[in-house]
Image 1 (cartoon, one colour):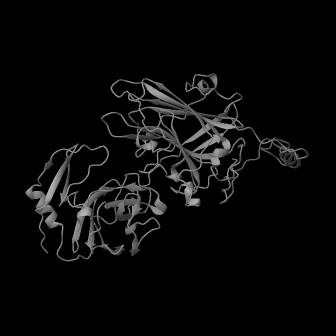
Image 2 (cartoon, rainbow, N blue to C red; image 1 turned 180 degrees about the horizontal axis):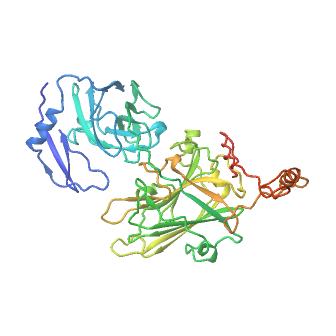
Image 3 (cartoon, rainbow, N blue to C red; image 1 turned 90 degrees about the vertical axis):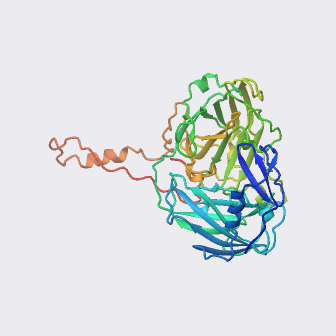
Length: 488
């Protein structure tokens, strides 16, 4: 099959990226500046020709998924099987065009482990960006090659590759073939030479405070000064150090969980002013709480340097509360948290040197449940919540940087299995023993009776010697599914 490519045009984007089109010009996305058009090189034209095939191949992983009767995803070839974490892998996708998809459609590619754990977006332009979906022609059999690399810390025994077409807020319907409930074609499930890396879960003891701290964004009261830090945030993918320092402290009382973020930042800015704006696209701190430890439902709270907030309840992984009722507006649930932000510098003045910004927030304990009721409110001494915290920093002239309290070790902040733990303790950071109920037996009486009964048995020092009863510590009982009592 031969096809004319004389109508190619090209648009140069900042950063040296070339997006080549067939018969048209691609509109430039956010963050890109369109410059003068240029003609494609002979090498570009030849490359596209080589990747439009005359006959359909027999891929290693066949799918034959029908996308709305317009495109068929034939399948996938993989350069390495099984895949080894930390090493480059070449993927080759094959698409057959029944009829032109139309304007605005784009290709997406995702990979993740079981139950969407370790999700990562590896979207790319087809044929190295030289043949966009909007220009696909009927009869095309397209070969699309790109590379991926699983994180060296990948902990799962397989990786699932998903593909599909999207436009705006919609995905092209998958009428037949392997798919999931999110409109994605399952291209392949590939075994992985798993490298299990010991990355301990973080734990922090939250001390109770007799006096609520004043919310002023300063963290200079004695309650805060006497409270240990939860430690510096680390790289989300490696657990290593990050360029921008972030530390956090927590306190609690019968009404609220108090959280103080201290962020070093030479360029403090935020232009999103509407509640529940996409704060994560600029600069923000994030707090996620799975208070009932069910590994399913959780709340997500974000604060920007300008004091704007984002808050939502998720009944399950990446499913927001509007999924309970499609008529509800996204992020309809609002917490009652109070937030004060203090900037050490000048907000939104990009050409000066700032020092940082502090977030001090008070979250009503009941809001940790979101729309659920699983966690005990208020918690008792020894209760444990699953929590993770993140920082997003976008310095001028540099790509956005992410750090975490408990590193997910994958490209997904919502990796619930990597959340850390916070334990509720008293003012000294200790968990007092549970009080003995009135009328209950003295817990030491049993040991005394045993010693008295065995008093005539010769001990190591002869008859009547002091007898030491030794034994092994019993393992902690496994928490039953659905049990909301987290007391340790």
